[in-house]
Length: 619
Picture (cartoon, rainbow, N blue to C red):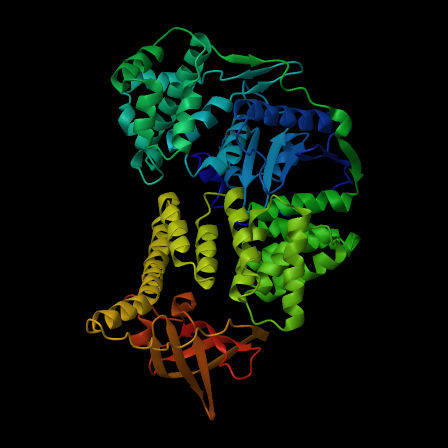
């Protein structure tokens, strides 16, 4: 996460509701990879779309092997003047004396916004936009890219200057140069190993040195590669992608680090700096741009959505009320209202509004996805299950690059023990689209456990442990990894046990004696086939019996007693309600006489006990 992005997060609701003195003319320009919405004119809208397409082309040339298109859409709000810009600017920048921005980048899990002034002044008025856009395009490389390289590239590209026939890259930052000349540089071994937990990333003074030196080293290597006709930076990236640690990779690609340190120290003290120009590689065919005029209500709906995502909730609701008065069937406004309801914890109301948005606009992949994701949080009838699955598949079809939809479909199928091969593939697709997302890896591991592939689940989680960044992510991965290892070990034991019995029986036969008839073993249980929707029951757990990894228990609820079975208790989702468990749960020892809510599904075979899916333990 960039130091600049932190300023965009803790917004409070503004008290000023934007008012429309007179209807404005809003234009939407759709290029192959961006949507520009502006209250200026078509020429300006086309120009902004052209600039962003050129910037994307720069990255395509610089990183030909990198998947640079994010799954979530990028909408550019290009505002013609300061008044319109401040009506949308985050609350943090509205106070008297606050810095005046020329643009900002707002990134969320399901969409990305750029807000920019068309009358912005200064040498590099859109530096923050290009910095954060760089991070967005590099996000899929987060699995292997060290922090210094990620931030160094963002600092390098933030001063990009896109003109009519050429692009300037890597223009030096005066602030960075002054800071580096006045400060002692970090050792390169330290720089290469800084991560998001390091004080060099979070502490303001240390962080400034880290950012500046990351830029300087990257700039130095880029310039030297160009002068010497070498590709050391590409070699470094290739080694990193092969899981070589950053210091070792640097030594192999850049040579002796002490010599590199001396060269860098001399570089930051030189009198002038080179930068790069690109001319022919960023040509854009603007004949593919689609332009349409927006109604005032449509323009307000876009602005309201931006206000909602930047947490100016009061202003967003005021605009949405006006939009729905003018256009009651505006699907975009319904989506934004659903988003606001969800953020306030009104899950059912949010789900209802997303369902309404789907009915109004069946081509909105976000409406389909959010409706399905929220519906999965509760009990579903067979009809509702079909609707959820249909919406997830529609979301994938409408936006094949949107990772969350693949992840939710994998979880949906996995929880129902249905189409498990497809569930695994859906989960792997989500990981390929967003390798840094730990939840996707955990969900794939859960699907593999349901499939009985313990060793594969362990491998997925061991890779997830390498990617985990926060203590919460590490804890979640470690807990499931412990269970997966136990399950994999139990699988090995269950496979080896019959062979040992046969070997033991053979060893006890006297020489020359006839071998005894092999002792018959119980047949494997037939594969479980679910019938009907998931059901829930609240009661007390009784008669808990384990034959690892199988689990049987009954739920006593008033006059009703229900027997439940699990082929593998490692697959059961255990949670707690209103209390924190003291340690790790041992299902075979800790469930007896515990109040709980269980989730189960009936078997298609009436002679088979219903199968236990989840247990929520109560105090």
